Image: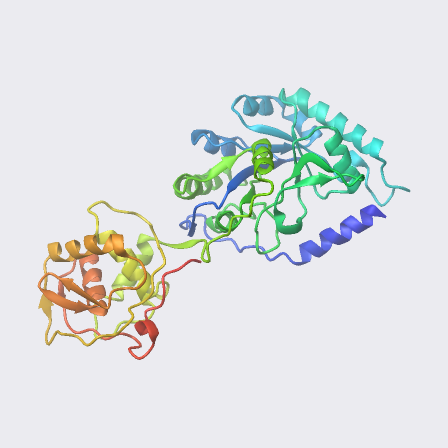
Length: 425
């Protein structure tokens, strides 16, 4: 039967899921990147879920709109909340339960007919419309069937949000039995590599980093944002992500209805190609503090100062910090390789420099942090190797005496001198 086939597909999909492990809610956001295309912030609301007021407050404060996917029962219990959310510009969509609303269950002798689908969807849509003062133009369910797609198109919905993974997870038009294409758009979840779907697995930076990775690699991405457990702490995590990623990287956040219209206009266009490294790494001040602590002394550089950053990443972050008088906060790394050569030092003994010497060099370097770390640098009156400059930059960052002597690379015979590359996560 159809229900058995659906359950088999869903169980196979679940077996491939390897959820992102949670980290401390107080941790820094680790992934920052522009979205490749458009992003839909989707809030599933059904069963005993609480009204997500803290979540919508965070979005309203930043003029970001969500799509609330509500079951008819939930809508009737939270009518005041939905009417308020609707008045603030959020979209209210309809969530259909295949078992409770449509009647797909192993206990049924036969699968629902086309008329059963139409009647069930029309009834549930009317209940949500009365509760929210908004006629749903978007519908969601755990999986789509041919008759379900036909019924949704016949009822003039604009968008379908399936919980199942779809081919390529890119928008498509619904299929009809006469082989014609319907007008309703099926919006996939986007490029979530771990197979767990689009819903944020937990309210920690790692859970939201996962959404950032998907948005950086896929032109059409849904981010499922469930109601918050521990609302105060979860709201702080969401606020951090919205400010440091969504707003800072100028994500194009749209509702489901808007995404369907944009997908219709883009139909036939070649897909956007994600950059080879879509998500750059972020260096926090605490990480740089640990790294510079391991770099201020010589005579040989460690390959991974502080255990987290390689030398090229530390060099990049230090240049950004020293190039400006203002505190840049967390530094988002760009592509940069280690030095192309490991030159001999010109120093025979330690030399002293001034803070102005160091910051002038950093300011000149900052706009040219591309390709590779310079093998030699002119700092004040002295020509230093990259290793010597890195130690000097570390001492300047920490406010220590600006003195440096000969410093050796960790692997002078290898490519990049053992520094490593600055690249994405």
